[in-house]
Image (tube, rainbow, N blue to C red; front, side, top):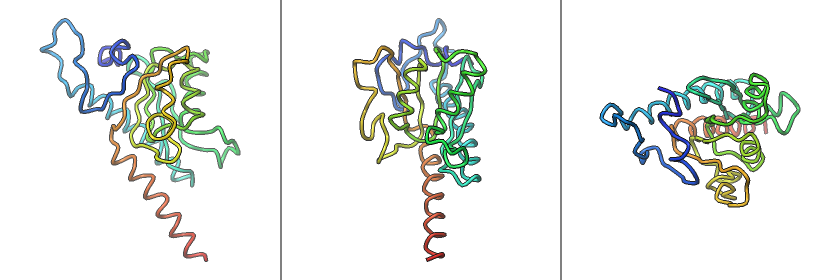
Amino acid sequence: MEPEEILPRQSFNSMKIMVDQAPAIPHEDESSLDKNSASAEHEHWMGEAILQARIAAEQGEVPVGAVLIEAGKLIGSGFNQPIMRHDATAHAEIVALRAASASKQNYRLPATILYVTIEPCTMCVGALIHARVDLLVFGAREPRAGAVVSQNKLLDSQHYNHKLSYLEGVLAAQCSALVQAFFKAKRGVNRSTD
């Protein structure tokens, strides 16, 4: 199923949607649609983002992964890599946007959905808006630096020239567990070397 069919842009305009509260999807034959199909699609792509996050962890980076989808197809993926690239901007979302932009030969990426394991920071929210991504789907909240619901709530601002809709909580427990395990292991290593 194509993401446009599952999540029409107009149904997400300026609203927060939890996975278990997916909206009714307008379609000529509504009986053929299953409410869980949108959720299954989101879980599939978040699973791909989780795979990217695991690559980050294997590289010693904070395990955050992202994938960008257009018309049901992967057009960009990335994982956190600021340490290995010596680049403070090499967050998973930015890496995925760069890959998709190179692939599409365009910095504008309308009609796309970005899946990321952890709530984006201020920089990444800004990049998603500038790239004209339609929908952001994230797994777990980032209580310290999250710029969607946890701290700044940037997407609630009305002054942007593009409205980025979002959905939170897709495979949140798995996404959160990756980060928690990473930092627990890191703290354990730091304590054993003291």
